[in-house]
Amino acid sequence: MEQKRILITGASGFIGSTAVDKALQLGYETWAGIRASSSRTYLQDERIKFIDLNYGDKEKLKGQLLEFAGKYGRFHHIVHNAGITKARHKADFDRVNHEQVRNFVDALIETDTLPDQFIFMSSLSIMGAGDEANYTPFRHDALPNPNTAYGKSKLKTENYLKGLPDFPYLILRPTGVYGPRDRDYLILMKAVKRGLSVGVGFRKQILTFIHAEDLVKVVFRCIERGIIRKEYFVADGENYTGSEFNAIVQQALQKRHLFRITLPLWLVKPAALLSEAFAGLTGRTSTFNTDKYRIMKQRNWSCDITPLQHDLDFQPTYRLKEGVEATVKWYREKGWL
Image (cartoon, rainbow, N blue to C red; front, side, top):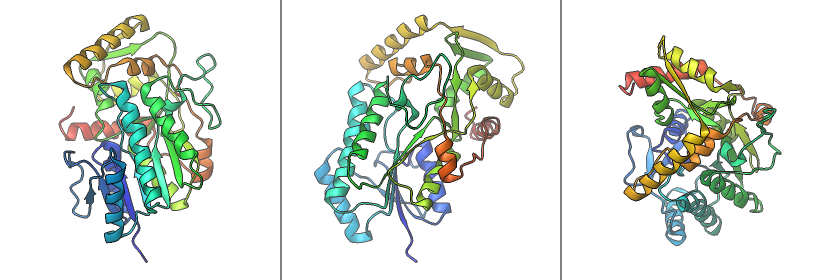
């Protein structure tokens, strides 16, 4: 039986590298798509094969795909996880998260090297602000209305994929992804370790999460079942208030007392603008920017995962409490906390 060949792009990141681990565990011929300059810290297994694809130049990319197919054959599955979540300039989101994906897809079509599945890692951010009066969850048939440059770039690519006749896309829209190797939620956990809990806005905020290993479980279950031309929200199925999330982190870190502060949105917005402007002047990317402000401002991140449960029999391995405890343990073992 032929060993299935899988390409996982963005493989140096925490989600991508977790997917690589799972692919190896399941016996795939595993190709990690990374730049030559990318870290290989989590890609040490000698079975991993590497490829550096030029998404910015479609003609060069076509040449690479043809050369690869001539030597090894086509990829049976592609998990396109490459992308950016922060950028110096808003135009970079469109360039990387849309134009480069479009180049890749067009190159696959034009070289006749289509995979059986092209799994595109999108985001719940494509939905924009939801129902902040009754906190109704986002449904799969709701109309997306992104309010961030990141969300708009992801939706643009979703729409492009859906407009291609017979293209074997599958779209995943994860909510907040956490777990070992992640550095975004690490910032919050470091603050709690120092005894500080910071909230934004005084109205109730509903949050949702998915552990990286559970997200990857969804990816490979979709592959096993051959699902194409669908999209799924991916979350653990539970809703948490901001206070409940902070309490879970506090408990995992065994902090008895915290100094709690809630910042008003009118104060956070100009701070985000200044941070973004300073980052632009210094040539750096800033995690705290106007996109981040809109994300912090949003009160409802609840989403309906019924289709995921129905089609994939999905049940998360990690509920938030157990997932945060496991993540904190990993952070401590690595000296991050």
